[in-house]
Image 1 (spheres, rainbow, N blue to C red):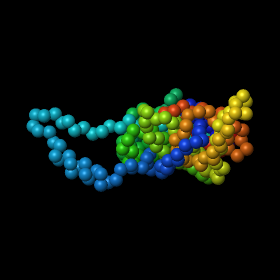
Image 2: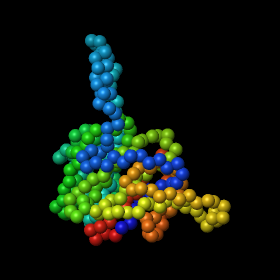
Image 3: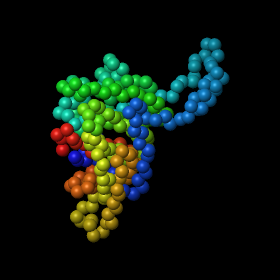
Length: 251
């Protein structure tokens, strides 16, 4: 197995890490961020906001900027095709998503949308149904992986809150190794150049997998157990995905 940084090459910093709950479910992209009572209040209030005859309706539904990001962690030489609601191709043919790559999908998701995934040249399919979406701008991350002890597809889903004024990077650290085997934590430490070794104190953090973190921008060394370190660089107000992948003949 190996830790692979995707979108662009990057990883986590150390101080001021804030773990956010991972929304990991096989049937929804992201959990609802509002209570049912809120909807009742909105419906009750709307009857007082009806336009007079001949007037334009000034009350419009809020539209959030939500992008779907699909990462292919299914170990296969074949790429993954994505079809929405049985007819709208999001990725396929020359645009299919290869193993260990991530890609933004065009268009907006709605509740109850069906996302059909198929591994090209392999008779393997999986369907993901979208549930309640966040009531905010967000990057909706969906990781497609191989189910333990089965060729079937499974999913992990997360949400990155979006902000145009963010001072930190956000990174999803995900264990997508076939079978979801137990794994030590991801070790992240400051990347220090040789000329800085005598003057800079190195910070070290142990990060749990399947979490989204808010992190400082900078350069860091990432490693799992005794694996060699990989230098990753984070920029503020950017989103990153780091996947641990492998299995099915792939290291």
